[in-house]
Each structure stands twice: as C-alpha cells, then as structure tokens.
Length: 384
Image (tube, rainbow, N blue to C red; front, side, top):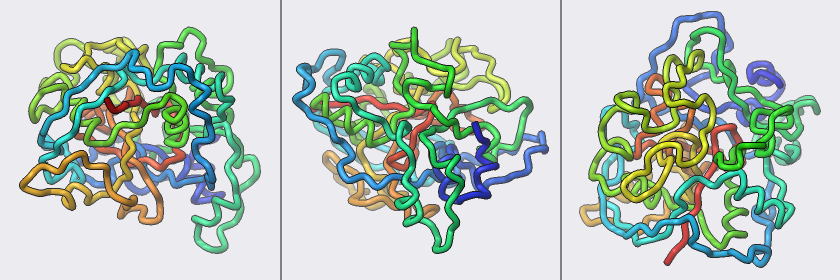
C-alpha cells in the first residue's frame, strides 16, 4: 500500500485518482493533531472529489444482455409511485449545489430494495467474465492526455490495478489532507475490499464496493435495468416524507437508536461503532424508509446516472415542476473543469457531521466515472 502523499510527487493525475473526500487543498503536514473544523457550506467539502478519469473507454459496458435469464426481473425491488416534491437542501448543512430548492416531478419506477450485494455482483461476473475498473491497469497514454504538457510519467509501480482503501489514523488529525486516511492499495477490488489478504467470504450480503460508474452500468446492461436519475434517487430516499433531512425524518443521525451505518465518534481516528459496524454492514441491517428501501442513508455511496454540474439546480428552477429531469448534458465542476463526473448519493460508513453528512437525502456528491473506493457501490431501477 502507498500513502497518497507519497504518490503526489510522481504524478498529479495519479494523486487525483487516489484522492477521495477532498476537503480543500492537500496538506502534506500531518503532525498537527488539532482537528480543523470545516464549514459544511464550503463547496470543496465533497467526499468523492479529485478523481479524474484514468481510462479511455471504447465500450464501457461490454457485456451481453442475453447472458442473464433473469434480465428485467422485479424480484427484490419495490414499486415507487411517481409524484412531485421539492428537491434540494433542507437545513443549514446544505452546500451551495443543493440550492435552489426546486419542484420536480418523477414518474413511477421500480427500485432495488437494497444496494447490489457481493452475491449479486458475483453472479454477474460469473455469467459474463466482466473485469472491473479496479482490476485493470491504468493506461498512461490516456492519463497524460488529461495532464499539463511535460508531466513526467509516474513510476510503473504506481500504474497497477489498485483502488482506494480506508485506514484510520492513530490520532486526531486536520481534515484537510485525505492522504492521511485513504491509501492506494494494489490488488484492492470488489473481491478484496480491504486489499490483499481480504475477501468477501461470509459477506455475500454486504453491498459490493470498489465499483466504478462503468462497472455499475455494465451490471445494469446485463440485468436489463438502469441506474436511477438523481431526482428519482432523492424522491425514493425521502420515502414519502416532505422536506425532511433524513430518510427517517429530522432526528439527528446520532440521536436515539442507530438509524444508519455511519461513523460515530471522531473521524478519522476513533469510531465507537455505536451502530454495530466499523466498515460496511449487511444490507437490511437498519430500518427501511417509508417506501421499504434500505440503506438510503449510510453504508455505501450509490451511483446515479446524471452528470454532475454545480449550477444544475439553478438551470432548471421553474415555478412549474420539471418532469423527470435527466441531469445536465455534460459535467461541469468549477473546481475541476476538465474532469467528467457523475452524481453519487446516500453517504457511507465513513460519514460524520464533522466531515461529511452524506446521509442527508439532499446531499450531492461528484465522482469521476472510473472512481473505485471501499465505500462506493450502487443500486438499480427499472421502468414499469
């Protein structure tokens, strides 16, 4: 395993691939034990930032639908009636890209009751022979197209199949250097979520992780389904509640009985595991929301189909509800204007109010399509 800070001197692109949960400029000073308090309105506080594309993909989803005899099945899905709601931020934790709150209408759709599990993804891989992004070697010829001219090629030891794995710090640290807790782990992928030596035996019912957008789309193609739009995802997460902060209502995530798999205690050094889990949890470990959906808050982040654009909500804000928004036609993140990103939703087992309140239903994240992390998965939807 290699710390992100050690890689950054080799190639800014590789650093970007590795950097997750960007909280501002990278800070290589790690000996300051005083925790930095970050304002949740800061536009740089995103859990999946700074991960530009590392692959040139000709056919991102090279699997055949015919391989799956169960294609299009609604087993383990629930029907969600369509409706109109106010989409966007509900409290003072909301970031600028969660505003303005605007009216949206969505048609009804089927949605997976849970995040796609290791067992389900294994069936897909067995049927198709699919190889995930994390299992592929980065292509330097594609990488350098996105770098400033003259950027030196990183050492070959860095251009290997790998993914991001979380490691807690041994003391409380400033939260502006993600390299202190994310590591680029050679051999980390969906089969080995903690890197070499780990496996998913006994975790068949945990959400599959280290899944890129390409991987999720390939699975959808095989299953005869699709990824939810951002609007569909938020409508579903709200579970019939109006303008509430969380899928369960407005009670703080840490109040009362555990409601989701998140980080309790001081992030990233001490997780009290009050909810019973340190890393991912089996699906259905917590109560479902009003639509019968599990883990719409916490556990792992989930891919949506929409491109991310910081000003998208403002561009569609009309007095009359916009019907079935599909997201912007292209990605635009002013912090990384040359990088294509998709929306991810729902938070993960690493979310904490001091760092990332991703379990809020309106919380938006921006994630590059080839990102693969220990806390990133997906669920699918299908039309009637």
